[in-house]
Length: 164
Image 1 (cartoon, rainbow, N blue to C red):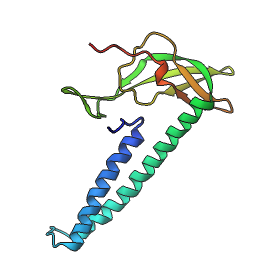
Image 2: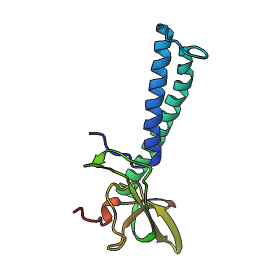
Image 3: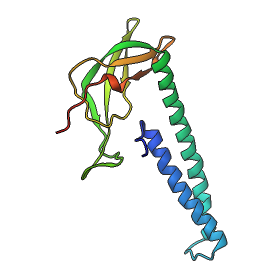
Image 4: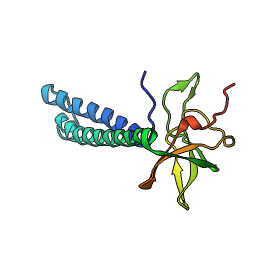
């Protein structure tokens, strides 16, 4: 089973890779077979597909690098308490991945405030695939003490609403 994406860039990267693959295959098939096309040749599809493949692969690599930095923060970062901003909880209706029965699954994200050395920072979470509770315990934020803007909100430290 494919894991749901954690950020927009991973989702967009997969979409561009798939579109680029389809266009490139159509272009390759057009150079081998005689596929009628209204204007230009069918091999021109590859000219559109290859940049989509390259850009999609770049987005996936960037997303993977970001996930690795989150993993490094979780294992070696400094844990501080955060505070949720209930008004900034978002449901991303336009993003869906898989389904839950008859309904499409759309992710959530929360915004959090954390303080480090007298300064206040804001942080948006990665995609949360369950509805978060806006009240409850405070989330844990892992940060780099040398660069406190580089932080990650641990989704396991949040409380989620129960499904009925």
